[in-house]
Amino acid sequence: MKLRVDVMLKDGVLDPQGKAIGHALGHLGFADVGEVRMGKVIELELAETDAVKAVETVRQMAEKLLANLVIEDFKVTVVG
Image (cartoon, rainbow, N blue to C red; front, side, top):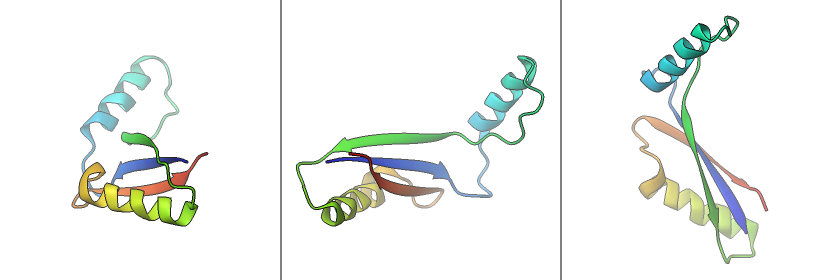
């Protein structure tokens, strides 16, 4: 079973990468772009066949390693 973890900085946390991307897009002529936030996507494949158990396992992985809970939020999604 494939799962995806989307990790994003929490609201209110400065995002210098997002600012740099937004600035660069403006210089490339994309003037209508507002705020840009940079995140990361982690895809995992588990042998688990029970979706509820798989999501819980990946949630634990995210809490322990994949996301910095002080400054980041995450969402786990089953993708296949």
